[in-house]
Length: 553
Image 1 (cartoon, one colour):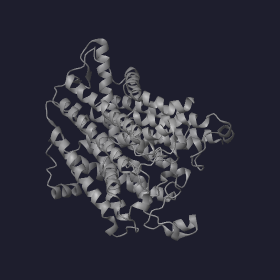
Image 2 (cartoon, rainbow, N blue to C red):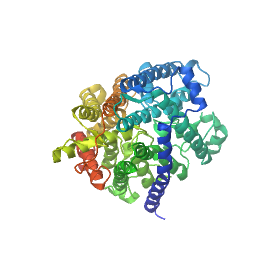
Image 3 (cartoon, helix red, strand yellow):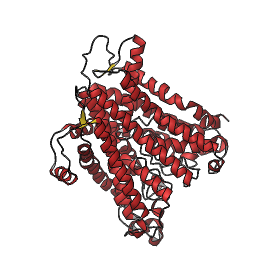
Image 4 (cartoon, rainbow, N blue to C red):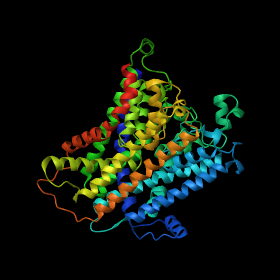
């Protein structure tokens, strides 16, 4: 069997597995977000933190809860990282510099997990488990909680209440993320991923000298990062490292986990609004962009020009030879279309157009299917814009799911769309204008520009993957990318929660013959066009200076 055929069979198997999980997992998530029943463990937590679980919050109070929880998380994680040299199981690591500790704390709380350091070489076990791993859970839960408020904005009428943040956070963490992480940690461990503190016995069989590698609780952290976020991983090489991704089966499972929850959330959306067809329309757009990205990246890497690459059968530099081009392209498309950021190959070594596509995936806002929660609320904001555009074309007030879209709603949607491109383009422009920061590029010309553009795109979109080839562990880059991560995460949440509050206060309007059906192929095509035109073309000049210029040279 050829590697190409094997790759496409893997894609078909992945689609089948996701399709099987779409309905049951989506329905389960909807029940989590709508049930009035509290588990005993949850009630205990509510008593400890002094929360009334049956009291809903206004959107402004919900927002303050999100920001307060995140701010405290940043301070706690920053302190833990700075003090890790005094903690047990610190692996003898030295104290992390202040600017790097700040960048790391922001990164994990913002669900980005951008890492400007080398895994276990700079982080002890306690900081990894009590700090980074915890944020991998709760930061992902925050994203799902925010999209839950937007859905409630569509389902609730004449109210200023959109839910209770503390209840949403607790339920999502305990009922969804933790059970999936526990189950698949065992599954990954069965495929050969190391799961212990030192890993001496397992690693001895692989490297011959058990004292040469420190090891770590990799399997559980691998699942946690794949469900919501990533970074450089425990061993810095990420999912290209045989301890984190030892076999083709583990590679398939990791891609499956990256896509599992984001692709199931549209089903939860459809169930919560009382029309499963709405969820099918959203997931259809997500699936179209994902499939197109997989095909284009794989084609770019397989058919790249050049005698050496043609002789080798494609652009194999930077690829993990155990997986080949097809599985690497599948992983690259899936990870850059979500907020996971895990990689099993070196994106800096991709062909110009292949690397450019990984950037373009993130520039779309990571909406196909996107990060856990953030992907769906990003797509719903774009759906609102698509309905507004359709309303302008036919000369009637736009409506989506029974709610009118007036000036206030469109202002929030427009600000959401403009936030991330502003952060990416301004950050990249400033970096390229400063000689000291240009000196951090490994390459010159268009490829060097792509390295900087990718870094800010990854940070502002809360992806966490790195194009590499650029020195980012400096005072300036740690600060600039840290600012891009925090504003890229929380400013959009402000606008989404404000939009949810505005929608919840409205009285629903009945559908008429002039109402745009938002569950049919026509709307799927319209929404896809809006994504490409409104979002994608924003970055075209920057892409023309980087990967496009390199590819045409």
